[in-house]
Amino acid sequence: MKASIILLIATFFVISNPILGQNYTNVKVNHLTVGDQDTDGGNSIAVVGSNIYLLWQDMNSTYLSYVSKSTDGGVTFGNGVQVSTAPLIFGSITSDNDGSVYVALSGLVGESINGIYFAKSTDQAQSFSPQVTVSADGIFASIAVYGSNVYVSFYKQKPNNKIGYFFAKSTNGGTTFETPYEISDAEIDNIKFDSPSNMSIDNSGNIYCVWNDGRRNGTGTDIYLAKSTDNGVSFGTNIRVNDISGSSAKIRTGPSVAAFGSNVYVAWRQEDDDQGSNRLIMFGKSSNGGTSFSAGAEKVIAIGGWGSPSLTVNSIEEIYIAYPQYTSQQNGLFCSKSNDQGVSFPTTVFISGANANAQNPSIVIDADDTFYSVWSDNRSDDKDVYFSKGKITIVGVEEEANNIPTQFELMQNYPNPFNPTTMIRFNLPISGNVTLKVFDLLGKEVAVLVNEHKPAGTYEIEFNGMGLSSGVYFYQITAGNFVSVKKFTLIK
Image 1 (cartoon, one colour):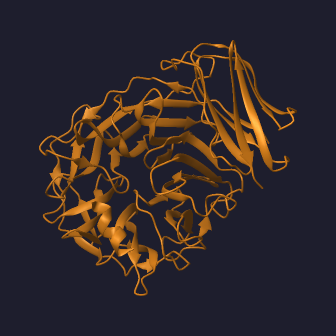
Image 2 (tube, rainbow, N blue to C red):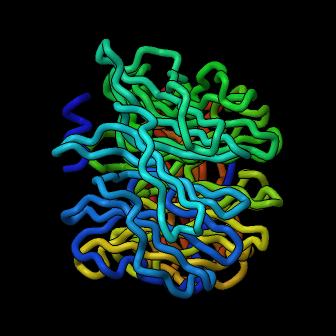
Image 3 (tube, rainbow, N blue to C red):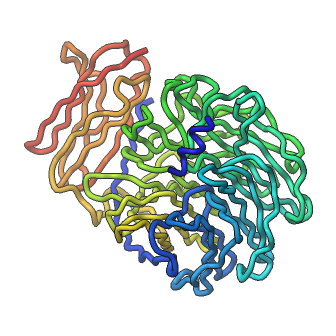
């Protein structure tokens, strides 16, 4: 674990998901610094009226963190205000209704990341208070504010060399913090770092913390949630977010959480191993305030999701999930939107405007349903910080997409083998009648997933093998003269 910290720096259900171009202007944020700049850590954006605050860090030489401010709604940004005199990185930012800005960051001692620190600005990010120590030990802080209470959550190594997820509270606006206490309720040997935690507060003041840990299996990680209903005095039992039937060896990390009424939404990244292969962006929902997450209800939002997602919900419970992704057409930052409480995500847009390895996004939504996003990418050799804002319009699959594939293609399903659900993705360069069917080894048709006219686009279909026996099956697509068949395996 110590080495990990040191090295860190170094039912058939159909989803139609055409990738739509809605033309978002990208604004470069960092101006004075050179070399790699990054938005890694927790949430990196806060919006108060027309003021936008972006938290980022210089990873080239100084390892200092900055807050850049825009007073014109994101058209331009200032040079950035240094948060502290000491190296502080991998931070998280938030704001209150009075316009104060709050940040929590990790300290850097030599090549080791350790310690959680807090700073606050009461003059709209013109300056920040001297840093306050939240915990002498810890890494990767998330921060949230509710009235005069400031909440910070983070990972911390315990005396028995186990890992815990901890919570600290200030009742005086961050002047002092109470002693942190552990909210994870199991002995944990393994966690994975990749913007690995998130905290959210609902309109009633309930606190939701999500993180990843490997209590179920030493090689993989799951996503867990804990909820406080008493302003952070205590937290309830840890609830596993991802489906319990999913493999314990898969690596799940980078969760993001938001709540609306009794619904709690979580997005995270999942991969089969620690080598960057088979990465997915996943989504789960609780309809009972986070008491439980329905088995088999998690969804694949994107295939090829390179980095961790950021999730938020607007005032009418539309869900936004931003994530880096590689597709056959584009490589960068995408955002998917749902207007039916996560039943489907019919619209996905390309935000970053460049094929440039986007990473570490953060998004917020204002009262006018405008979304604001910040991330880092390497479009100009070094990694820089970029901002974009706009609106995402839900459109039907019958409407024309600006980004269409150049050839027919049926992709291999994922996961494979599967139990009981898997995703099938295909490309249509032109519109036409499409059928997608599943057959058993004897050639008997067992399911029809698609049988309709489809516009050109990229589609993802979820197949649920519930009720079928374990074994090898085939899925076949027919679109005009194009016919393709692939094999997949159901294991129960």
